[in-house]
Image 1: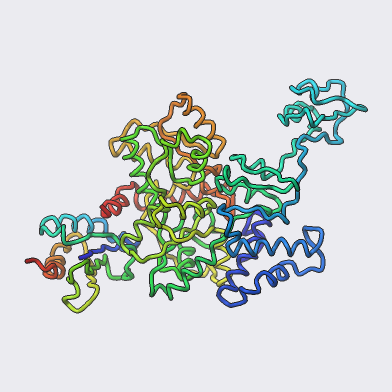
Image 2: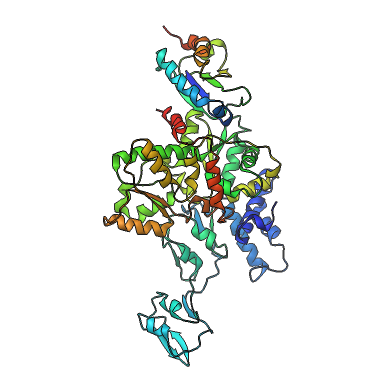
Length: 96
Length: 477
């Protein structure tokens, strides 16, 4: 799975660099670093909805399981990042 | 907004008129008749304004149309001479004017190391066969009666790539030329010009179908802040998006990453010359091949930001917008890994906006906030040196002793010292243009105020150090 954190100007000001740092730690903590490619992305087009994180498939169908190509999560910050990850992203990672 | 005062010179203005008309036709039709129609539109006649007749003026404009549409595809150089426009400036370079009083002192003859000056009928006469054009007599004459006449193109070319051909026309030696573009700005007849890639860029934009097939990003050089005669930078950003670009990203963000790489590279290699200015790199490769081993392996900020964008958006197309002619060469080099798809100059940007009737002053603001203070001041001579010293220290590399080489004359002097082991420095920032990129040949204006604008823009950066930019880079590995 690709996880892209928006670093466009608006998200940048709302703390996307912190979100990236937190995500790095989360991926380590949940031991899914091999399954996820964490990236930064320039503006994803949701400037009014807080820091946006986008997830899409790498090789294995992950996001496709919920019938979509892309999953967007809005209003992410360093405090709620883990909660949102656990709820929205982690279940899609096809852990055996 | 298209009055004379937008540009420094009428040469730029004529080039702009041609570009604007070509771009307009690329969208509204009529490109196939561009060669025939545009010269008549710009030089309607019947009286000639600058040349012997309106037909010659039109012939020259026709050549400009050709350059605006990509120029000579067989010539790899991005700089071309327009033969018809070259006015064959006088070649005898030291000239005695009628102001010569035929004095008793004869300081001109006294100072001449070649005894090339004799006094005939109370006037100094120069024997051109003996004269070595050292210019000492021009300084010695108390009446300033002796002039050194140099062809402006030859004088501007620090790489010594311009000579005269058998017909007295300027001729560029591609083996020596480093595509810095100094001659483009300096030729008073506009006889030397850069090729435009603007039709390629329009093609990229059209084929994206409003960023549906792939997204097109514009990456803007930090020197753009000094180029906004109309409106604020944040308005220009909006205007660029109106042209059909998906997003605008600061090249200064790439500059932050380049700085980080160079500091790390220095730690290992202990002696570096910078790689940001492609003309400076070419100058070393062509004139100091023995020093080429010191050229930094870090890619330029333009390439770095292109790679960053393509990392998160692999089908993206990236267009660099800047003041530089040699970036038009750099983007094609293998070492840039296809990071950049095309290059547009500030002059071309102005023509593009006006051809599409986009009024910058009426735009909303789109703020750019990613890059740091240090990335943004890359545009001025001394910017990299300043950044590397301070960031290097923070990264635990404390023995960097940088020198900022402003223009090719300073580069040459410092490289000569380095070659013989007489240089006290170990980090060499080189910029081919005097003053740095903010004085690039394809800038709309070359005002002394440019540096003030660049420094102000740097200070406005929300990021005071490079480390947030570096985080983005580290995600790549």
